[in-house]
Length: 231
Image (cartoon, rainbow, N blue to C red; front, side, top):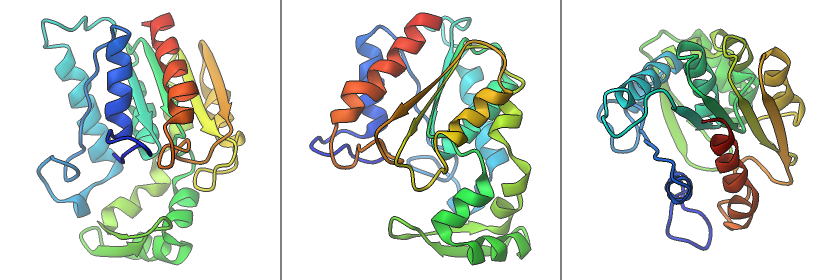
């Protein structure tokens, strides 16, 4: 989560409010070890995050105020990779929207952390911590187990198991999940079912760190429209 430029609202909170205004309830989660969740972030893995997402999807089926037969999936960036795997695990999902989903994890994380750091992580024992500088500033520490899964997860491979409506939204000026729109089209190539790729004039964060303009003008409305059409 990060604050949208010119507001005091996080991107996901803003999206949740926009969905609510259209009569669509939403559940936002922090993966284990991140945000307000308990656990150790260094121990996060793709498989662990996918398991968290499946648990969240299944939790919604237990709520009496939720129509469990009309549940959609919305994910962003690394979450987009997780969301594709969630759709494969729960193909009964009625609609999926993926924002700038990671499609080639080794390439993306080599961009974010540097190829040498990714190779170090791949060679490290599963429980060894690897601290890396991030391309946008700051650092993160992840155990070798995270890096070991980089070659093993595939958004396109996962989405091939999902036949429901899929909308992929990407930025034409991407520098993290590249190249675009090729990376976005990779998912459509393997997906079977109603689908649409939307290419926006933006970078990886859809300009949201500087301004809410593109989010409120295109990203959010077209996300809502897809869910209203298919849920």
